[in-house]
Image (cartoon, rainbow, N blue to C red; front, side):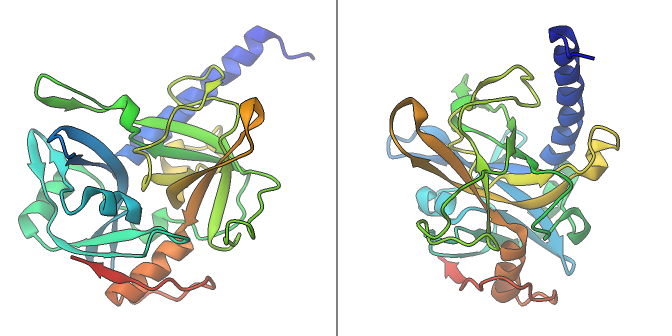
Length: 281
């Protein structure tokens, strides 16, 4: 039986509904970072995820998010600007682009636990292959965050993207074991917009989670989801209308190894290239 436009539209609606359920669950563990730029304007800076391992509590993001903020980085908890207390450890944001904060303020931690859900190891996936090659990116693009009336009005953007084919890892000094590469070229669909549309500018989504949703069309998408990495960079190749856009994702296995070294966690060392952690003052 041929798929009619009405049938295709219905399928997209069902798919978007399931992805919206997954997105709502993901946002419970996703932070947005802000900073004041040189003109003292409040600006969206990046995204991050909340993790707990060994009864310790962390925020993970991309290193370039923290470096760009020059120490002037905070989150919003209710109506308050909160600079999270703790020690940042970060890579040099070249090949591996990661930064992790271990939270040290008990009052801040209690407030975060009331407002958010910290991911555990069971919420993570270190596999390189999954049920399919579709992944869900959830972050806070700066273009969708507006500041007016003295308040920030943020709108998360959940983008489903397919694993890229033919990406030249060697040219970019990357390895498939450390990075997942998604295709950001051409038209896409999102959980909030099931109709094909151009991929928006994802600046501000850096450091946000990238998820695999398992069999989300049949199972519970809020339970099927697994964090597979953090969005860290966009790469453009070529010129003109045919220019290729790739989204680089640092895999969860690399994140865990980075955290194991930086914070002395009692988790197994994965079979990935090690990344030296350095404290950020």
